[in-house]
Length: 183
Image 1 (cartoon, rainbow, N blue to C red):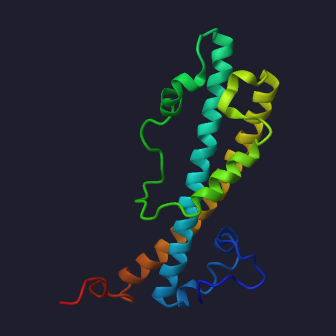
Image 2: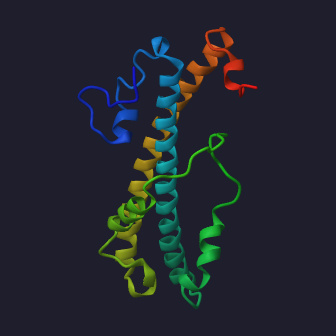
Image 3: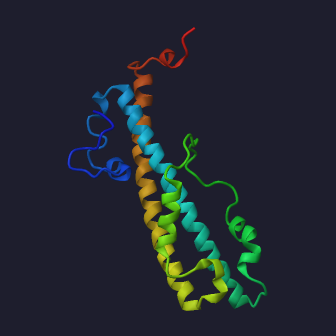
């Protein structure tokens, strides 16, 4: 087993990580290969998490503008952007995972999220009609659900890989001393 793309699968990391055969042969694979697979899954989870945050930020902006319009508040959402983006970001609601990697392809992720609503410029939400903003909200909400679903599936893969590493240490198939630096 290796970190190469499973046969017949795409070359995108998400396609590899979510492929039906990504975890096949896991119990027989060398520990280094299991760790490499887990690293791929961790990187994909970090990237999906980043895209999800980008989408959620735009959702918060659109919702704040729609709320501002119905509440009759003055000023623009952009005048209060920091508050809008911080409003729903209290404590972390993650899966209790220690994040060890940064998102990759940050520019590509940003371009992707911007392309979702390219025909509606969100830098001036006051210039958009309610209908335009509601359409953007639907598009972004659908994308957030899609990304969240993929992220949950990737986390399940990560859990399976972590469980296999843990099993090997518990059953004595792997030696914790091998993790310690040589003196």
